[in-house]
Image 1 (tube, rainbow, N blue to C red):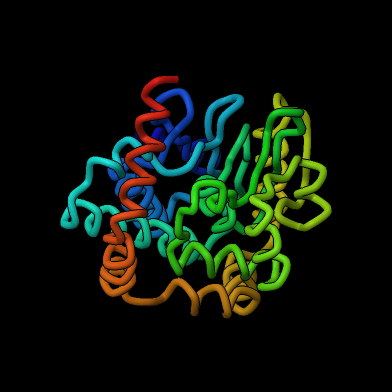
Image 2: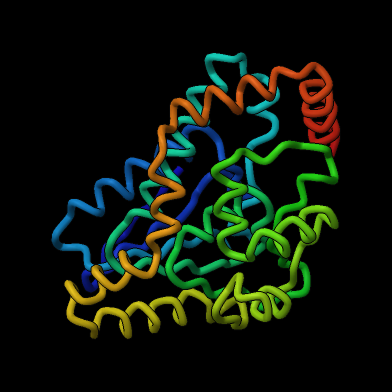
Length: 252
C-alpha cells in the first residue's frame, strides 16, 4: 500500500493502492505507521508524499466502506484520523507532490503537508465534492479543509461541490506551485532541498509556531471523533446512498 524509499536523507512516500490509490483501511494504517516511523528516524531529514502519474488519490475506498459494519468502520476512522494527525504533526519538512487527481479524502491528505505542488493537467482536480452524493465529511477533515480556505470560502466550495484545476487551486493557495506532470516530483525535491538548507531546529520550531491552530485541530481523541462519525453514519438513508454509489462503481 505504501512504498517508501530514502535517498539523500529524504524519504519519498508513494501511495500504492491500485490504479487510483483509494484510501482503504490498510492504506490509512500504512500512512500512520510510516509517518510515525519516519519521525523517529534521525537519518531522515524530510518527507515527500506522492502518488502515481495521473492519480494522487481518488479518496476513500467506497466499495470497502459500503461493506463495513460498525466495528470495522470505527477501526478505519480511528486509523485514518491518526494518519492525518501523524502527517500534520510530522515536525520536519514535508512536501506533497500531487501527481494527478486528488478529490475528497485525497485532498485532505495533501493538506497535511507544509507545501504542495500540483500537476498542471486538464483532468486533474482537487477539492471536496461530497455534497454531490449527500455524503457527510467527518469533523476532522472538515476542520482541515476550513483551516486551508477559511470557513466561509470552504463551505461555499462545498455547497457547489467545487473541484479545482491546478491554476484555480494555486490562486486559492490550496497548492503553492503548479508544474507539468512530469516535473512535479523533481520540483518537490527542489523545494525540499531549499527547506533543508535551513538549520533544522529553526525550521522545526518555526513550523510549530506557524501551524499552532492546525496542530490544535488534529490533537484530539481519534476514538471519540470516530465514535461520533460512525454514530452519525448509522442513518439508514446515508447507508442506502453509500450502497447505491458502491453499486454504481461496480458497474463501471
